[in-house]
Image (cartoon, rainbow, N blue to C red):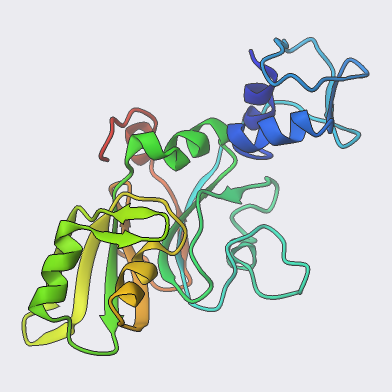
Length: 239
């Protein structure tokens, strides 16, 4: 298989990130530095990354976390701040997992963590249009004109932000909004509302790729069921 796919199967990173590591000269095959991600390797080859031998992971883990505010979505923080890894220590005690995508420190909700590099690559790739639903609490009522602007697409500094659906969570409280979006751009939901001069007081991801927070309290995690894993691995676009 291609070297970048081999590295991803070792549960260290996504296939895209593996390409970066390889091009940076951090991977060797049979003692030789290889910088071409498409280089073919087999199970008989000795592959190392940063001077440590790596082998494909056989025990694949899929963890769904209901992330609280105040946690960084990273595997390690040099500043010593709380990370999502602190919340799943028991789940990943003997395996190294990493987040699929990210949630801002002040954003709560669903986050998937896994050591399945190939699946992580598919879920993170923009072409698959993975659906995400957020519940947003604003500092003031979302007006009808601004509601329509969001539906029609808001032009931001990096292009037009297109939403799939928008609605009021409670007709009596129009500060509470539900928004469905497939874009993976950084801080996209916050930037949409900030562009229209709203402040996002709370942001919670309540659905990701068909997975929901049902029976999963804030700060808790669970393993995906076999059925859920199969659905993720065989999804088509707009899951």
